[in-house]
Image 1 (cartoon, rainbow, N blue to C red):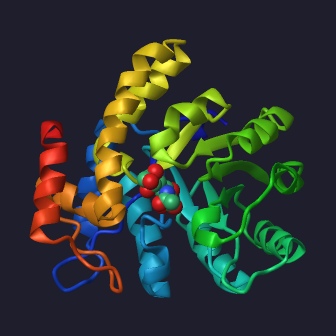
Image 2 (cartoon, rainbow, N blue to C red):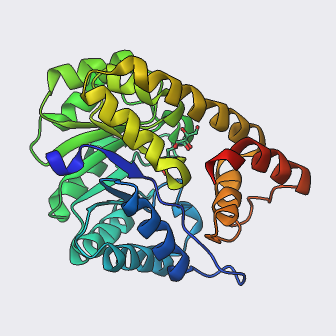
Length: 290
Ligand code: NAY
């Protein structure tokens, strides 16, 4: 399980000026983060605009990330889709590309029952021979998985962990205590230290794309029992995240990376773009990072 413990940027998906997947920028982004000591990458998640990519683009993204990583880090493919068959198809691509694990949000939109959601996950682990990391993200999926629900997955060997993007840290502590050998990823970057305190083994986050070094440092400090030294770093990170939330997190992240010399293009429509004023506000907030 060691290879899953640490910092995993939820990779942004770069596009070029014609709105096509930009493999070169993906390479720059991954190389920069590998140098900063990340443990691996979470590919094709919400941050990666998974639901705004075509099927072939999403498969290409899995392939490109695997080629760039070339065995140097742990790779998790987010394969979530509303349709079980579609998600399984993405899972097979991840398996072919040599990913270490698959992960999925709960199927959403139709208000599926928990038995249907459970069947979705069990169908996936039955069809794709890769360990599964359940992605609990009530804010976007509209589905809240309780600690008991999560236990129904973790009691099966094929489920190795949970990515918990929820501020229900009581639930996190409950399922981590019940299944201490499973891996738990904190999902909200602005509460990273809270997650570690409640049992998370690391994190998967969008802001890691441009400031992974701060999370790597916090993670190391906490492992060494130096929580009080990590707190000012979380404070600094939160000053930045608060600004990002004001203008739109993903838009701001792509703008920041451009300022750092990695042009990831714009977000896919219907996302809009930052205004000039918003861009200057973001620049003023993060300029000490460059
Ligand atoms: C993914 O699937 O791309 C993620 O892991 C998303 C993680 C992010 N959560 C959400 C709801 O977007 O990094 C966080 C988030 O952007 C950050 O904490 C700022 O709120």
